[in-house]
Structures are given as C-alpha cells and as structure tokens.
Image (cartoon, rainbow, N blue to C red; front, side):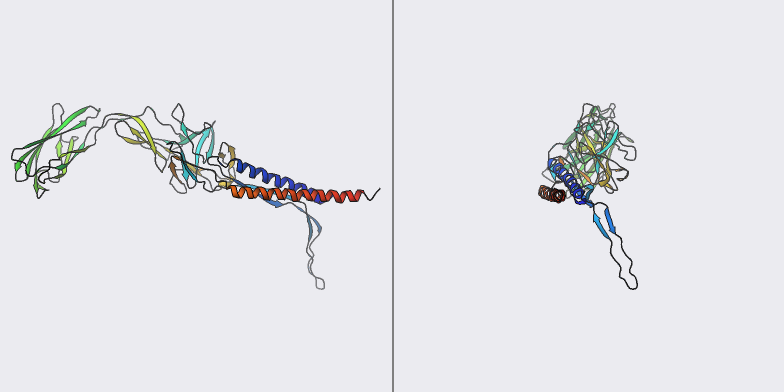
Length: 400
C-alpha cells in the first residue's frame, strides 16, 4: 500500500487530538483556576531510500534521501500563565498572585491546585468544593510554626482568647490651666485582672495653682493599691513634677503603669481622659481575615486579634510536568520534581488575595484560531487519503 495513505491517517489522528485539546480549553473558559493546554506536533521516523555519500577526490558527496512516514503528537503542554482576577467578596475565596499552588489532601493523597474557591465544613476544616482539605499550619497560642509538617487547616470555632490583666494605661487630653486652686478632676477607666474580672481604676487630679496638679490614683483592688505624684505645666507643655518622664505606678512590680506624658495644660479645655489600657476579658472567636502572607487572623469578642493558622503554598521546578488529576487539581510526577512547600510571599512564592478568584487563562481568540487550523489540517490530510485512494483505483483499473 502507499506510504502516503498512512501518512494521511497519522495526520488525521494528530489533528483530531489537537481538536480535542482545543475543545477542552474552550469548554473550561469559565473554570476557576483552569490552565489551557497546547498541542505540539513532530514528524515520525523517515524511511531511508539512499544514504549520504562522502565526497571523494573525483566525486562530490551526496545527500541522504528519505521519505517521511507521517506526523505524531510530540506533547501536550499546559500554559501556567496567570489568569485574570474576579472579585467575589467571599472571605474564603482566595487567589494566588504569582507562582505557587494551594496544597490539598483528598483521601490521603496530596494534590495541588490554583482554584481557591474554599469554604469551611462542619468540623471547621477549610475545604475545596470537592472536599479536598486545604493544608497549612495551625496556630498554637497565636503562634504559627511554619517549620513543622503541614496539616489540615482548621478554624477553631470554639477557640477562646484568654483574659489579660491590665499592666499599662495611657491618658491624653488637656488639664485646664485656668482651673481654680483646689479644683478636682476625677477620671475612671475599667481595667481587668488575670481572670478577666473587671474593676474600676480611678485617678484624681487636684489643682495646686501656677499650672501644677497633684495626682492620686487607686487601682480599685481589694485592698486597693494607691500612689501619688505631681505634674507641672509651662505654656501648656508638661515640664516638671515627679511624674515627668515616669509613669504613675499602682501596685508596684507587676502592677499598673499609667502613662501621663501626653497630657497638656492649656486654658479653656477640660478633655483629660483615659485613651487606652491593655487588659481584656476572655473572648470567643467571631470572624477571621486573611493576610497576604496566608495568615488567618481571628477576631475575638473581647477585641483581641491573633493568628489561628497559615495557608501553605507549593512550587515546582517544572510545573509543566504536573499531571492533571481532575477537579482543577494536579499531582506531582517524576518530571515535575518534588513540591517545595513554603509560605505565601516567601522565596519563589506568590502572595494571596482574599475575596477574589483566579479565572481561566484560556484565550478564546487563540482557541478559535486553533479550531480553524485543526479543521483545515484535518481536511488536508483527508485529501491525502482520497488522492491515495484514487491512485490505487487507477492501479486496479490496469487489469480489466
């Protein structure tokens, strides 16, 4: 039979593969995190009809004569170019800006994906739509150890931010310079002990004239810890007194230091008040946010914020060598290299964007062009077969 007949068949098969790949790209034009593929062709082995001849003294060299035996698919390459971002507003939707893959575990198998449409299951685990559990590091006491092994990211729904005793407090505002001698200002603030129990701390300011004030304080404990001091202002600026450059300490070592250095002493304003204190009650987890470095930060009912976990990313020496595992996931192969796990924003890793998803990187204009190229290539190879058939028909007609 004619060699061209089989060359045409190989062309049909190869261009059919190109159509299959292009059709799959178009079908996934709206698939989150999808990466398009491209088909590469190469020729097959050629039949040698005449070998190359070396040049001689009286005869020139001759070139080899070979007849090609068709085409075959050299490979199907995945394009890992960044897809566009689509804002969703969901706190659990995440997009990798840059290189890297989310690490997930499904049925004990480690998979990798660019699709960041996640949610929490009934056990508080961060999962993909197909149930794959997102991997990372969980925090212990607000501290994330990224040097340990990765595990299931779990939002501790029953987490409690412990109470903290008040150790410092700050006052700001203005003590009136035009106050009368003997005028008294009392300022209170709620503080907390180590168990989260609240009590009231009181500071009393007594004007002693010429821009000076006596200060006395009580921490509200039973029995109370008290202390006194003085403040002196010149042209509204704190310039003297026993508390210049030193806090008012209530309770000695381990007690409460009240910072009064921000107070001013201008006339006509009485705005002195407590601006901050570092104690708090115990609190329960209310919500969380995601930072660019993959840290999940929990917000508690007592106003505390602390890390509850951190998402891991993985990179590969040769990401094109990954094997597609379905559900927009990939698995490592011998040619992809081992996964290099790290933190978002680390060396070679992209950062995370919350409330957005990475869309498919399929370029429809390119894919429709590929459809035309594949169709015409298929038609041309079909002509090879029909032409070869006509030649064979002529050959059989020699015998009538």
